[in-house]
Image 1 (cartoon, rainbow over the protein chains, first blue to last red):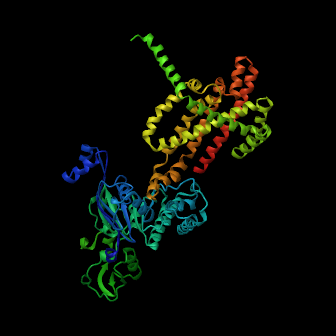
Image 2 (image 1 turned 90 degrees about the horizontal axis):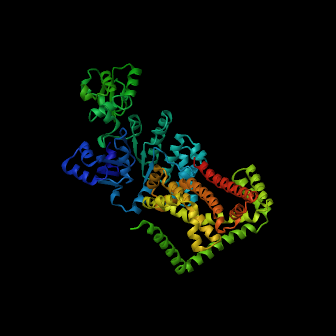
Image 3 (image 1 turned 60 degrees about the vertical axis):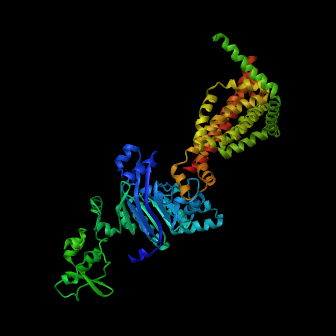
Length: 354
Length: 282
C-alpha cells in the first residue's frame, strides 16, 4: 500500500456537497450552520441532497470504484468531478487545479484533454460511423483529420474493434458499442477516465469480459479511472479501492478486502454478506503469530502474505498438511491453520475469530 | 359608447393606416414589389429556358434518384401530360411561385426556428403568433398585401410566404429542442464549444424534423398559390379562378390535375429526402 501514498493525487475531492432545488443556497446554509438533516431539508426548503460532504482522492494509475444503489448520488458525484454538475459547496481539484474556479475555456480544455468520460447510454452519434465516433473527441479539439483518424484507429485496435471502423453504431451489439465509447475516451489520451455505469446495461457474460479487459487496459496504459457501479461484484473485480455510497454519503472507502473484512456499518455488512471471500481475503488477514502453532514449522508448505484463501485451500488439499507457513522475504511471519482458513471463508478476520 | 358607432370608427382607422402606408411608405413597398417580382421572374425564366420534355426528363431523373424508378417514370409522364393539356406555361409559373415563396419562407423560418429551439423565451413569444397565423383563413393575407403591393405575383408571393413559414419554424425549433440529453452531456464532457455543440450534435439530430418542416412548408405554399389566383398570381391558380368564373368546369379540372401532379412530385421528393436522413439516424 505504501506506493499509493506516494503516488500523485490526480483527483482530490474535498467535502463536496450538491443540493438540488430552487432554494439550494439557503438549504446548504442551513445544513452547514444548523446541521439540518435530509428529511428537514426536503420539508423546509423543498431541496434534495444529492451528494453530502463527499471527500475522495484518486491517485495516478488507480482504479477507484464508487458503488451505490440507484439514488445514492453516485452519478451526481462523478459529474461533480468534471463539473458537468456544479457543486453547491466544496472543492474539486484535478491535477492540483481547482476546477470550480476555472473559466469556460480552461474547463473545456481540461475536459477535452485530461478527463475522458464513458456513459451508460454510450451516446454514440448515430449519423457517424465507428471511426468518426471514436475520433469525435479529437475532432472537437481541432486535430486534423488524418492524425485523428490514425489515433482513433489505434484506440479501436486496443478495444478489439479494428474490423468495424466503417460500420454504424446501429450495426453493433451493446458490448461493442460500449467498446467504441471507451475507444472515444482513450483516443484523447486523458490521464483520468470517468466511467458512469458503463457496463450496467450489458448481459452478464459480456459484462465480465469487458470488466477484465477494462481493468487490464487501464493498468497497461497507466490511466486512472473513477468507475461507477451498482454492482459490488463489479466493483471488487475492477477497483483498486472502493467507496460505498448511500443517500449521498460515502460510508466507507477501502480496498475490497478491507470492506469485506471490516464493514463500516450494518448496511455495508449486509451488502458484502453474499460476496465470496475466496479471492478477497489474503493470508496476512487470517494468519496467527508463529508461536500459536505447536508443531515444527520448517516442513509446512509455504505461501506469501498476499496469497488468497483459495490458493491456501488448494495448498492444504494438495499437501495434506494441517497448517501453512506464511513467509515474507523468506522470514516466517505467521501460520495459517485450517481453523483460520475456515473463519476466513466466513469473512471473520483472525483478530475477531481468535 | 355607442356600439354601432364603434365599427365604422375602427374600419376608418384601419383604412387610414393603410392609406398612410401607401402614401408615406410607397418607396418601400414599390421596392419590395420590384425585388419580389424580379426573384419570381428569375425563377420562372430558368424553368422556361429548356423545352418541356427536357424539364420532364430531368425531373424524372431526380425523382428516380431520390425515390425510385417507377416514381421517376411516373413523374416524367405526369409532367408531359401537363404540357399535353396545354397548361405548361401555367404549370411552370405556379412551380416558380412555389419555389420562390418556399425559398424566401425557409430563408427566414429556418434561422428563426433554430433560435426558437435554442431560446425557450423566443419560443414562448413565437408560439401564439404562429397559432394566429395558422388559424386565420388564408384569404386574409391577400387583402393587406394587395392594398400595399397591388395586383400581381408579388402579392401572391407575400401571402404564400406568410402561410408557408409557420410549419418550418415549428418543426425546426422542435428538432433543435429534441436533442437527446445524453448527447448534450457528451458534448460537454468532451469539451465542445457552443458552435461545435450546435453543428456537430444538435443540428444532425434535428435534420429529420427540419426536413419534415420543409416538406410541410411546400405543401402549405401549394395550397396558397391556388388561392392567390384571385390576386393575379398567374399560373394554374389564375386558370382555375378564371375557369370557375366562366363555369368552364373541364378547364378547371385540367388545371387541378396539373396542381396535383406538381404537389405530389415535390411532396414525395422532399419526404424521401427527410426519411433517407432518418434511416441513417436509426
